[in-house]
Amino acid sequence: MNEAENISPFGQRLLDRRHFLKNTAGTLGGLGLAQLLAAKEDPTAFSGKRPIRPDIDPNNPYAPRANHFKAAAKQVLVIYCPGAVSHVDTFDYKPALEKIHGQKAAFIPDVTFEGPPGNVAKPFWDFKPRGQSGKMTSDLLPKMGELADDFCFVHSLHTQTSAHPQGENFMNTGFTMEGFPSFGSWVTYALGSACEELPAFVAINDPRGLARSGKNNFGNGFLPAAFQGTDFNAKNPPANLRRPKGFTAADDRQTVDLLKRLNAGHLEKYPNDADLAARIASYELAGEMQTSVPDMMDLSREPESIHKEYGTDTGTELKREYAKNCILARRLIEKGVRVVQLFNGSDPSGGNGITNWDSHSNIKNTHAMQAEIMDQPTAALIQDMKRRGLLENTLIVWATEFGRMPFLQGNGTGRDHNPDAFTCFLAGAGVKKGFSYGQSDEFGFKTAADPVEVYDFNATILHLMGLDHERLSYYHNGLERRLTNVHGHVIKDVLA
Image (cartoon, rainbow, N blue to C red; front, side, top):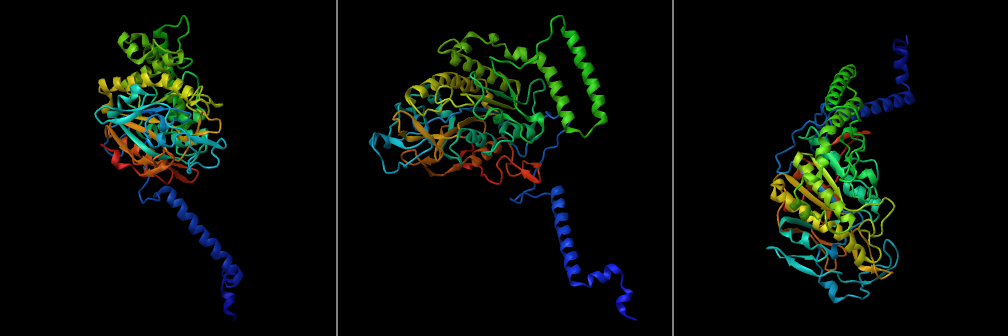
């Protein structure tokens, strides 16, 4: 009897070379899939560190959560200037430009973002030493310059793009593309908020409207909807919070309490529905905001000295409205809001120096106009926070998406985009005071010493909030997503 007759039909097929290879390939593929599925349950980041996803109660997504390690900063105020502030006209002193002013220098490329360039241009404003540190800053922002001893400048930033929407996305979300969570969303996802009656993350947009990349700058991306920024400013309070006529505060409270009971009962039926929990939390927060926001928005309660210090009663209407936004930002920080993002500049369709810092022409007038809006109110905000002790627990981040060229455009009056060198600064909890890190070259054209990527800048901000940028993650579409993607190093030299 043939021994093969004792083997099952499936076993006989394995003796055939073609079927043997086919089954082996399928088995190996299955093993690979099993390994990937196991990695989903027990992932390890490329750095060798295991990702940390915060334990979030869907019934209370804003509850405060522990950070990864002890840190001085518990809150963060981001002052963002859309349009690209010229570093060589503000905080990055380049005396070499004086020597070659008006010349067609060898380092000037044949073409930049908006076409053929012109000649080198020295700063349009004089630089002077400020404070005990003697930091050289320009007369464009004299009041902010007076606070140089409190600032930690980063002069060697560079970015991946020279286009505004992508630049804003990259600075605020870590990616040039849309659809990724903003910095504020990552922080509130990780830490929640100690303030129960106000949003964990508030975006105070410019009186003129949204910045070029719009709500993407403070959106939640693929993070749960609870962690998106809430958009309002001193001029435009949150909508739909006013109590209807004939409806008393007691009626309002009874209604809110009834809704809580009904929502709690509904949530018990669907305990794992994160979207439902986020919606309920959002509505309940709105109920709390009905009583807390009117008081928060009532700036008339501020003493006259504060209004005078911030400048709500002088200058252009835009400056006065921005000054009110600065007071609102301080009040939100005082209340314990985790992240406040304050915008100085707007215009989704492009401002060319009129509605933001994008000065492609007539930079002497357009940058001066933006500076008149920003300087006094922003300096007052920082000084006021310092006086009240808020900087002990609050990190301040002043940022823009890229810099501007040390030479003029072909029109002879404006500076083009410069992604290869620009300046931002930090202040407050956890950072050195009166300190400058990194250098651009002698003309402010490219980074020259200690180059800093945007990934590094964001990694450092997260570190100052007690968060490990390599471990804070969210599993999305098969990947452990991070604010810093797979990049970034903490700038340890700026840490206090």
